[in-house]
Length: 464
Image 1 (cartoon, rainbow, N blue to C red):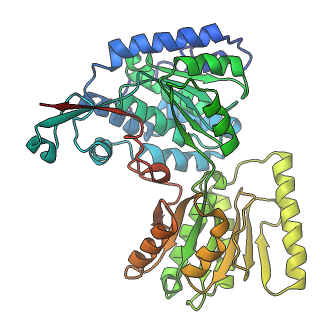
Image 2 (tube, rainbow, N blue to C red; image 1 turned 135 degrees about the horizontal axis):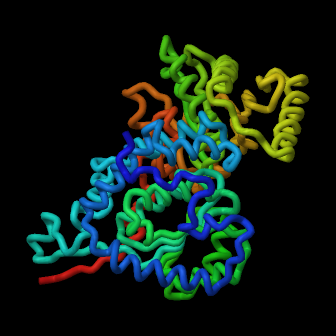
Image 3 (cartoon, rainbow, N blue to C red; image 1 turned 120 degrees about the horizontal axis):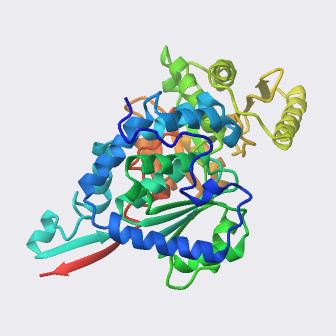
């Protein structure tokens, strides 16, 4: 059923088409990085820059359809090798990858281009919007010659999105993966090679330890644009090492939370709200910036916040049976055990704290508190439930993370959602979505409030 290529590269190991294929012990040098970048630019000029938007959309949409096929060799390999390489269980990987590739359609990508650039053919050459026609002006949106991406290692989907954006902007790309996090990007790159080798020749995937300054300096000297995802200190360090002429886009650490209204918990709808909350807590094992740390639950609903917390624990237990959490390092498990012990002591001495958890493991934990102060989770399906009177109270107690909030999941009745979304926007939230979809942003999502595609390009205006 899978359309692109024939999956002919599925022998073990993968063929050495990308630097990451050489293995962790490969001896990379600044000269190798420099030569790879120069080859990427030459290949882009020959194979990618002349491509039409419609042609690229067809290739990407076919890849999206292929990756949704259970028999597609690259997908099968991702689910076979992914649990050991990424730490996520196969069901968690399946849900996460399906969430990405399901959106890789021609209509969705055309909507992205239209939204960010104003016209469907902006990347093909000079074109005009209705307003520009009257001004006798046209514009061309052009991607950088070579983009270097410094990616985080917690989730694969942002890296896949980055690759797609780079192809749409006709940019050669050098993707430097976090150490040990290259498997899924490698497989996606190989699937591109399987479909169209000339496109894959404009893409490089590499994997080396962080802090390899000589390798990174070689990469930064060649790149037209550098994007990076990581902690604020890491981004500041990268920015300080870039040539003055090199553009930089940094995506720093963000947190997310959810708000559940009392009205949404009235009647039979309460069960659905609990299920959606469990989906957001369990997606990608709560590792992404879009995962909730806290669920604020409004008082005076048909299901009180304490009962909501208990029901969420029951739902997370069922989720663990269907989509088990990945295995943890000893240090991570110890952190959860220590945090649990803290709340057990608090619950033993106060009726304002309660805790529910998986008995024989650290698979999931729900902590309920009447104190509405925002609390960072230790992640890995460890969630805080806080009782509040209204959204205003929740936001006052989340003031410590204001300006660093990526997503707010919202469970609300249809008539009460608009004013709540407005209140959240005025407070500074850059994305408000229905509860249950926090970790599944659309491809048109404006990352941290910025246009994902338009951020990458440079405009040329032609005044006639």
